[in-house]
Every structure is written in structure tokens, then in C-alpha cells.
Length: 194
Ligand code: B4P
Image (cartoon, rainbow, N blue to C red; front, side, top):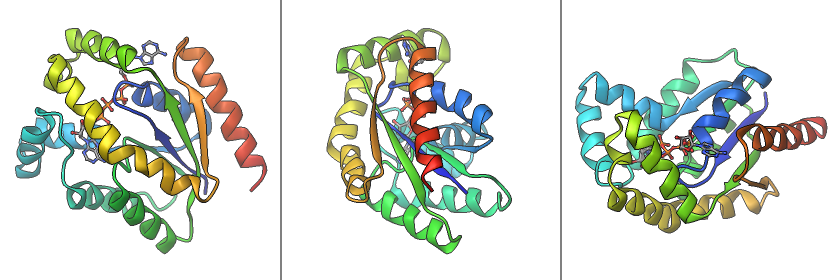
């Protein structure tokens, strides 16, 4: 099994690149953002709780997203590997993920961290908000709050994996194809040494 975390701030291209990577490497895509939006569209109690936080640009509680990932791992025993997109977003989530993977005799192979300037992030997300129907993409102050959450709670996740030499930084500005090609090279490098 080869498991990847696609890491980066909101709007850095995680969702965009994930779609291409899962096709190329045959991985199971696990996006906590997509899982939460599915709960919201089905109007479940979990979805309603998540929506009120997401609309303010805040993170959803760790136990909620860890529970969703736990179920998704159990539901997919036969996969070649997982691509985690938007998860883990806190130190507690990364520690929980490491434990869950260990129980399945596997671990994170590489953390690919997309690097994009703050102004470019805001521009991309406002642009997506014109058509996505996502309430968290339409308001600049909510987008900036998401970036603050990322800086305060999520950047430390990269430090957690850096101590195991798992993090590779990738320039996240440029064409989607160019970034995809750089991500593929890094994955192939890492896969060849395990
Ligand atoms: P997510 O769904 O993870 O959303 P995101 O970080 O905003 O999106 P992403 O980074 O995937 O977008 P992409 O760059 O592909 O999270 C939403 C919310 O859910 C969070 O704020 C939080 O409240 C909650 N949540 C999710 N996971 C959680 C967790 N683990 N714990 C707690 N809460 C959690 O796309 C952005 C735009 O850029 C697109 O329009 C795209 O077309 C464009 N783009 C992509 N690449 C480009 C390029 N190279 N050049 C130009 N534009 C590009």
C-alpha cells in the first residue's frame, strides 16, 4: 500500500490535483471537505453542525473528521493506497491517522505540500465562488479566516511528518499540468525507494 497526503492551504490545488492523481496511481481519494459537503447536502445532523463552522471559515471538530476517515478506511480494505486531501488538518488528526494506518499495517508514504501565495489563494477561491455554489468561497473575509485557521492549526502538520523525512514541497503556482507533472515525479521517486 502507498498512502499520500496532499497538503496545502485552502485553494492551493489539492482537490484539482487529487482528481488527476487518483486516476494515474489508482488510489482511493479521501477528501474530508467532500465528505462533509455530502453530509451537508443530505442535511444530516453532522452536516448541519459542520455547515455552521465551515460557513465561518472554521475547522470542524477533530473527532468528527477522524470518525469519518476511520469509517472510510474500514470500508475500503482492498485498495492500492489512499490519497488524503484536506486531512489531516491538526496535530491531533495526524496522530489519529498514524494510529489508524498502523492498525492496518501501513503508513504515510509521502506528504506533498503545495506552496501558493496568499493573494493567489484568495483570487482562486473568490473565482471558484462565482460558480461553485460553495458559501465558504463567496466572502473574502471567510476565505481569509480559513487561511488564518490554516496558519494557526494546520501548518504544524507538515512539521509532524517532516521529522520522519516525509515532506516534499512543490511549487503550487503555474499550470495545472506542470504542477501535476512535478507531483507525479515525486510520487514515482518515493515509490521506487520503498
Ligand atoms: P476543503 O474542501 O478541503 O477545501 P479547500 O481547502 O478550500 O479546497 P482545495 O484546496 O481542495 O481547492 P482547490 O485548490 O482544488 O475544505 C473546506 C472546509 O471544510 C474547511 O474550511 C473546513 O471548514 C472543513 N474541513 C475539511 N477538512 C477538514 C478537516 N480535516 N478538519 C476540520 N475541518 C475540515 O481549488 C481552488 C480553486 O483553484 C479551484 O477553482 C481551482 O480550479 C483553482 N486552481 C487549482 N489549481 C490551479 C492552478 N494551478 N492555477 C490556477 N487555478 C487553480
